[in-house]
Image (cartoon, rainbow, N blue to C red; front, top):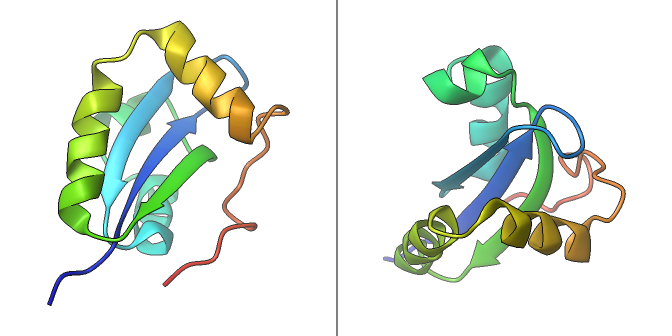
Length: 98
């Protein structure tokens, strides 16, 4: 049984440090980041604001997309974020979680 996956971007503030990640359970992963157990990089820079997320039908697709996004230039990521979230709001409360 294949499960869906999410690619997401966290920040600490608008135009701040960006972190791109992938997970099969976005709600749990966000809780981990906010508790400081998500990743050392996110913990160091206090990256807890979810500013971008994509849902994929299969986790393998999400992993592939994350690898692609991690190679993107910063300004491309900013355009991607602003296309979905122009005000850089924390989307954690607005997304459906599975």
